[in-house]
Length: 134
Image (tube, rainbow, N blue to C red; front, top):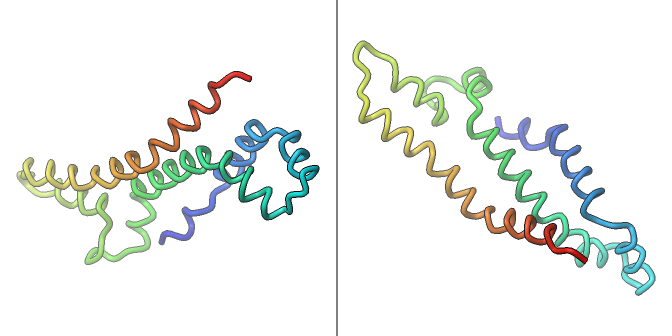
């Protein structure tokens, strides 16, 4: 269930465009002139520059997979639902229990907030690095 949402066309194009814009060719040429190997260039230059874009892509991919409703309804049985499918089932019934629905919504929101807290520093760092002139 998780594998189809890990690699998307959006992610490939997003990272390609991010690296084309953020990684100047002169930086790679300078690494080659200094005698760095391809692995050293990737590890020391490309990876630190790609980290903010990868953090944004990771957050967007997680949000897409976490909020997906239709795919889990198709692939999983009703005895083992995801959080979103379980929230949908909580709202059913003659008189929905609002307190239970709100508690379920809080539980469904917490992982998204945790991912944002973990990746937010990388995102802000990427914004600040792009704002420096020179």
